[in-house]
Amino acid sequence: MSAPLGFLDRSFPSRCSGQGISSSDHVDGGVEAVLGLPAASIRIPRGTRLAPLLQACLREEQNSALVKFLHGTTTLAFVFREGIIVAVDSRASMGQYIGSGTVKKIIEINPYLLGTMAGGAADCSFWERYLGMRCRLHELQHRERISVAAASKLLSNIVYEYKGMGLSMGTMIAGWDKTGPQLFYVDSDGIRLRGTRFSVGSGSTFAYGILDHFYRWDMNATEAAELGRRAIFHATHRDAYSGGYINVYHVKADGWVNLSHDDSGISKYAEYMGFGSKLPPSIAPQEESSTQSEAMVVES
Image (cartoon, rainbow, N blue to C red; front, side, top):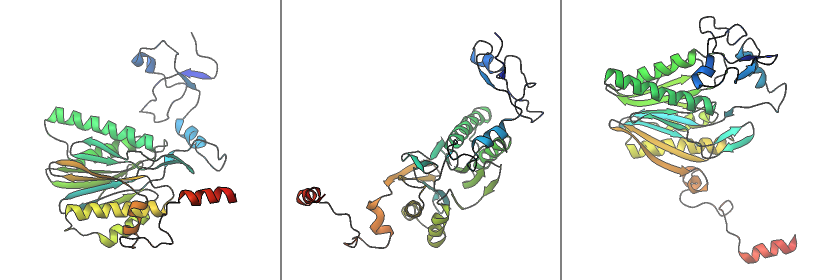
């Protein structure tokens, strides 16, 4: 059965030409053979390149109803005396719509390696899990754990191959290897930076304000975890695209551990906003009595 006019059988793009999928980029068998499906059962519209098509679908100035990536977040990580603290929020937004408040933005690559998600949720989740598979293959082949530098370089090389094709990623790779704690930043342009503290996402400017002011190398684990939690809280308080829960991880020599999963709401407001243990009566949440509720109903 031949493909309908205007469509072509799904086949992989030529990596040598770098021109994306076109009507001449046929590979015998294609994805149908890999999946064991009948020929011509998977079809895509004819086109020369995928990148311009994706960019047109995401161009908001032409049509505000077009597809939008899940974006808007606050993630941070910093190195201190006893390891690395990684802290993130849990809100995923689609434009002005909150898609989820319970997204897990820390990818557990292996027992000694963590990755964070900022940008396109699907891109970060897929490629960091793929990185986990490649790290495991490295262990099986070389009989030793991959270093944090090598893992981050591997991810950087992978995403650089797709530069200009619509990937949206800003991730941090944190881990502990033979050289000690290591922290790297990798984005979808292939940029790879090594540092001692990073914050990525729409709320990162607010988080940096807290980190830069309170950060000390000689903090203990409790103080460092509280700093990460406080920085994420202030970001969620000021940034509309950040919110939900605050997840805090500690990367140590014997692996990472999940320290806390806290609500970023009113429970920490008094402490973090400088009101001590008690909120002023004017802004403290008050429970309405049944009599007050009934009176409001009668008045309305």
